[in-house]
Length: 186
Image (cartoon, rainbow, N blue to C red; front, side, top):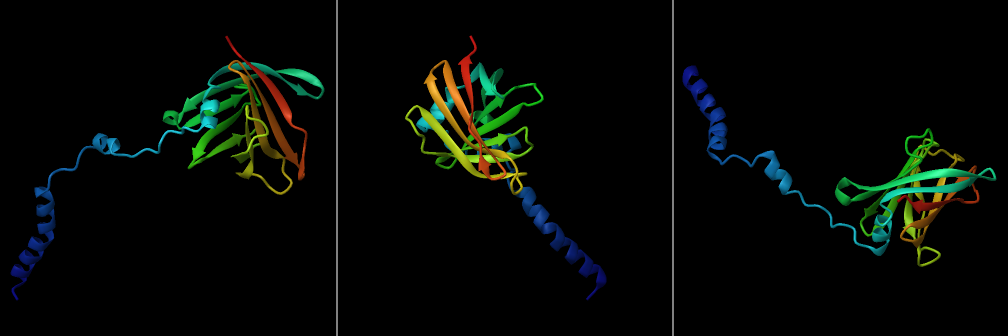
């Protein structure tokens, strides 16, 4: 076979897919593709609604070493309403954030701790109807015997008051909960 004809035949074969693609309608721009993204349903459980009711600025107190200390809390929605950000001690050296979010039908709380670990807690049955409870599921940066949060119980007193009892485990032993008492800032 003539090398020139072979070269032309190969070029024609190589270009035919490009020609076919050029004849297809252009795909929609990226903005249109984003509109096609399907989102999970917004959380609708009563517990999620209770957590959402905490959105705002809070001031309060906590007992540390037998002495009452001031405490601040900011709670806000993030992620297009898919998560609740709970920040204790904002702008202090001990600032800690907890992200509440759904995981299918369950509610999770991931706590970004001043102890430099990230325990994940899942919602469990609460002791009382005006409470939401979370217990340790797993976490990151937690070695054997390392101290980390293992529980949280939020008690809803009224629209402007709530308590938070945080349970901590150290060397495999759960310590008495640290209880924060919060009032909504005016």
